[in-house]
Image (cartoon, rainbow, N blue to C red; front, side, top):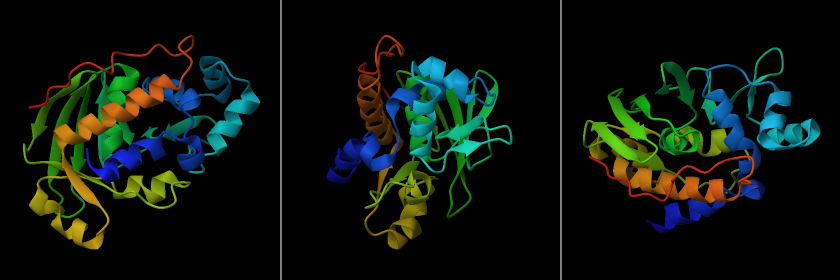
Length: 222
């Protein structure tokens, strides 16, 4: 793991840095995976928190998405269209960034098929990710971009909007030139980073309310 991704791991799972509270995010992701908006009261019950505490935790991520009725429709995993399609058990969902697509199968304990487009070439990347590994990458040369912005408080705009799939390192070159502090990783390495993030995240959630999938298993990739 590079120094950038190692530091990023620590920062993304810190509510003080990213605003993301694993105690709320993990149950929210599992509820959103059903493909329906999530009532805050239902999320509070799933998280074992008061409604007030749940709303406070959600507000720490200002880009959390709500529908007209005040139900949550997106925080990392979203019901609204992005360039990262994330299909689980027939439910067509989306994510805020490429790394999310590799994190969430472990958290929700379900396999996902992923389809994303390169922001430079428009080429399509297809990935199959399971709770225990990545089983397919097309094209095999695909990479994932990473940044480590100074300020993560608006995580979607500062981080997620720069974390993409590219069809190859060559395809990512214009992005690297525009983001000299960034880096690219093969999908297998990005999955390992995602696993580290997930393990840390799940360790911070009370086991009584959020069972932890086996995130420490070996993760083969094609």
